[in-house]
Image (tube, rainbow, N blue to C red; front, side, top):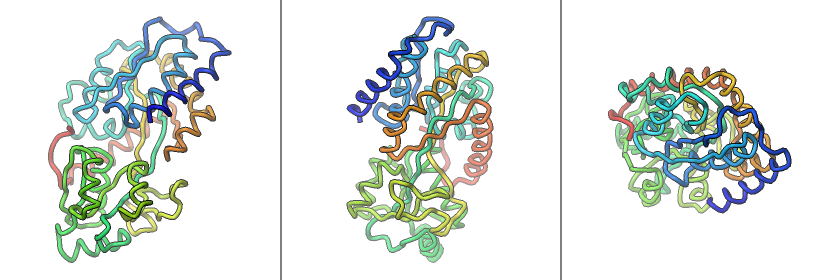
Length: 324
């Protein structure tokens, strides 16, 4: 992963070098991306790619700081309390839509103290089963779970994460009672799934598809309305029997509340230009990631819609607790 980041960084910088930096950016201090996850993950990967483009096009240094913990709330808090000058940006995912429900007192106001800049990408997710689990579709999972409530187990990681939300969708929309098994991370759950100690899990395509290809796990569905181009043989959740189970991972960029609109617009413009570069698109496509750009207004509408959807889901959650 790190080698791919370095090679892509070189390509992006070379593509921008001829044009030279723009001189109309307000200030010379570095732009900081605050990533709400540990190093090495997709939330860390994306800003490192964007940082090289932005540094070359805007003309100031751009750095990435990883601040994992509290379901992304630590990184969000840093940005929420920063100077509203466009130099401190948050890179986040579904936490932006679920934390206002999970964390009623986060120390700041998610809607007032953070403003949308750009939606960057989306990534399809995969529902998989252990090799011994008899179901071959979501319909069969529901049938088995209804015959004996709580007999079917599903692994989750952080409460409020996409895999937890997907588990809740399966339980609530399928009207079944599942046994939720929490792990520190999805990677920690995979060995137990392969060993048939837990039955089901939802995770990113990149993480789970190699296990499916090797025969260690069974793919039941992609949790979206369209099949994945990197695994077109796997049915969608609609085709597998639960059309309400619609969930994809996504990553967006936020700025500090009160950041002037022209600065937000400029940041979105530069991010959109980076996403249009063939080398950036190709690198993301190889990882099963789809470019999904939204401007600030569109992202704001999207976040409000997702927050409403997830709030209803979490209010009926089988799992009670706080983001970790």
